[in-house]
Length: 165
Image (cartoon, rainbow, N blue to C red; front, top):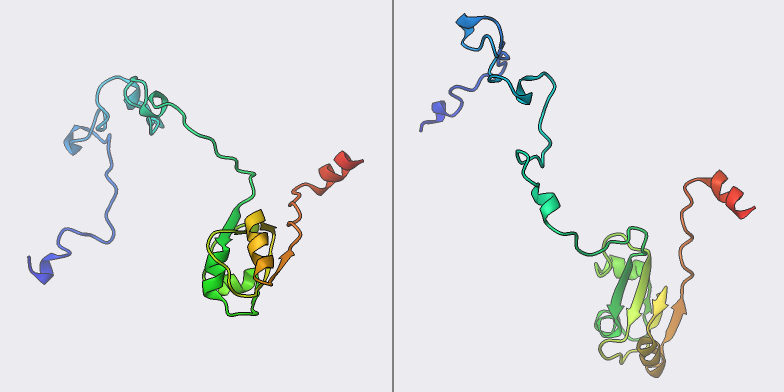
């Protein structure tokens, strides 16, 4: 292939194929739609999962699991990771962890777990703490500050007020 062969046969303004315009066009009479059957009708297209009347794969495979779309998304970090990231006496916040790239994406709450060893005195601000994390933070002489949970988003204010009354 040569460089001048790359665009051979490619036209910028290609005319649409005019079907059903007599036998001389080669696509007259049935206009490429064949004889009889539902495919001959205008506007008809098969469903993407249609398999010719056979039970579709989507319906043959059993449903599995459950996804709660309203559940709060909780990001968690172990105290051992915080021990490696921060110096003694540092203040650990959600913003500082985002800046370091440890908390990515969307989440509702941040939880500190008790995995690993904590040897540094840290002031940790989070929504939740596990029992073991609280024990390790207090044993190291640090402080755990609990943030209030985010207020739920109400989509319809009128309906919410009416429900409260």
